[in-house]
Image 1 (cartoon, rainbow, N blue to C red):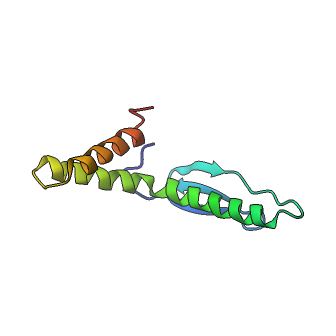
Image 2 (image 1 turned 180 degrees about the horizontal axis):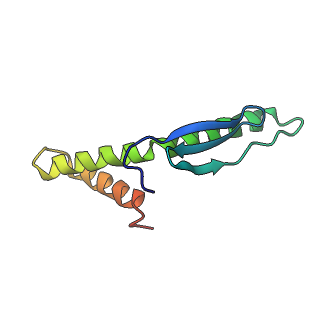
Image 3 (image 1 turned 30 degrees about the horizontal axis):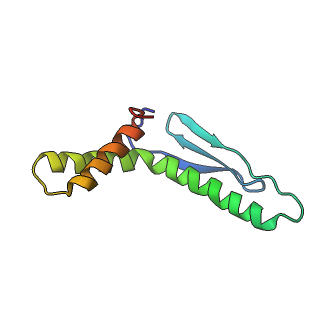
Length: 102
C-alpha cells in the first residue's frame, strides 16, 4: 500500500449494519464485512461488531505504526541503546508489515 501522507481513516459505511471501510484521499483501501445479527446471539454480535471496528482502526493505523518502528530501528542503528531482544522483535515486525516474512 502506498500511503506516504498517513491519511488513512476509518469510515462507517452504514451505521445500521455496522460495516466499515478504510480509505485515504485516493479512495477505499479496505472494506470490512458487516456483522450479521441472529436472534439469540446478542453477545456474539456485540463482540464481532467490536472486533470489526478494532480491525478497521488497526488497519488505518498500520502505516503510522510501521513508520514508528522504522524510526526506532534507525535510532538503534545510530547507537541508541535498545535491548537486543526488543530490537529483534521490532525488526521482525517491520519485516512482517512489509511482507518480507511469512
